[in-house]
Amino acid sequence: MVMRVMRVRSSMVVALAVLSMGVAQPSFGQDTPAVPLDPVAAIVEAFDSHEIVALDEGAHTNEQGHAFRLSLIRDHRFTAVVNDIVVEFGNALTGPLRPFQVLRESDRPRPITSPQPVQRRPGPSTVDRI
Image (cartoon, rainbow, N blue to C red; front, side, top):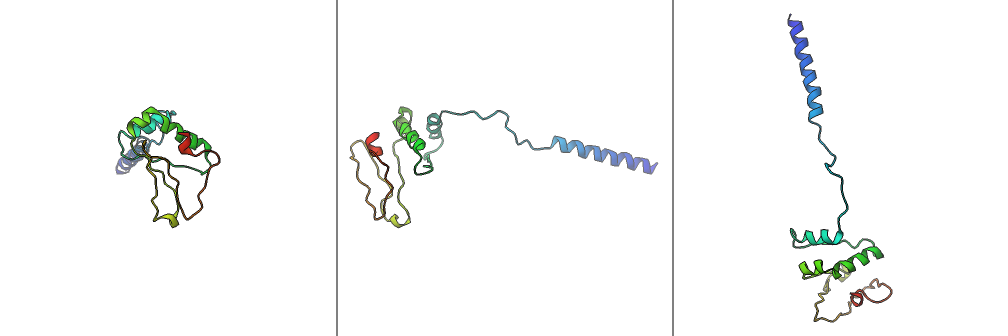
């Protein structure tokens, strides 16, 4: 009799362990599939909850990214929420230099002076194309 009770208990423990493993499995999938968003709207929306939003340049010769950034700063939704744009340049040797230029409507573009060679894009400057 004792042997039979032990078998029933051990069977119940094994059954409960197996069942709990199936129930307690973490779910790594998403409930809904990811959908593409309008990138300008997503960036503008990021300013609702963040004071600073950064964009990575990617590769220095990334023309698609460059074209997107130009379209972004021309978009009225972006200019309605953004009042300052900081453009990083330079390297460790140019650290003492002012690392950005602030271009306001009243400012004229100023040349970037650096003791180091600077990568230049062919054609008119970005400031001229804005």
